[in-house]
Image (cartoon, rainbow, N blue to C red; front, side):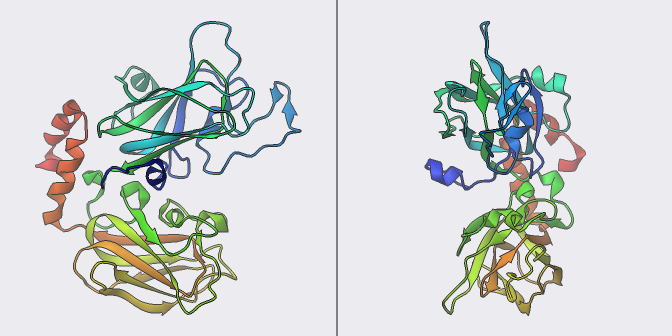
Length: 348
């Protein structure tokens, strides 16, 4: 995938620091006023001007105490899945007189399940140098560092203050060790991505590729009501070209606003993978797919409009297509880790 050319483009990428995908806050050096775990909540920050607690104003974000000594505050986030970070949003929503004036972001790469001590002792590289922040604002910052897979990021605020949300937008680089046998090739955590869609009036189409079941309608993708003869659709770029065997179209949580029908096809060739078929409201549908050549872009048409909560595109990657996936993954890892992994039996 080409590097995004502007801020609006990289904000279309998955938020690798989202708890909805599986990210976590590993450590914060201070969270006296507000818990650092709020940073990775998928929802926008809420605010109640009248909410006060024993330690003062209650904020939906991370807030440290006022520093009286030299230094700065920081938080370490383990990303939901390794990826190439393209940009961040240090969102200071609702922090007006208590936001940090500057922030910087660093990254490290430690595959597997390293301990906090191992992460803190790791070698960190700069993604974003010390940058000015505005209060009560989305501070969107692009990464200019060379492409590299990272697993953990460290947000440092200079010197102290409050941040509502920390978004880390990046490209998931498929780990070839997780792409064997049948797998959901459309999943965000494997590298799937919504390339285009006809309408996203009520909620983002990327929601349908997230893990787990939807808890509410806004966890899925819902379009505006159509008043013409057309239909809505989305196109998913798979983690890697693969032979699709099964599609799951889940309308859970959509009771009076589910689509009436759906169809799945190869967006590049137009080949029908699943003919137009009726859907039920609030139901997880599983359909076997007709044999076809490997697909790179899958198109789901819904008729005429409505919402679905999840889309699963289960299939296999042909053996002959594994080598370039493995090579790219190794090329984007730190040299020492790539060399160690290349010696594993998995890679022959």
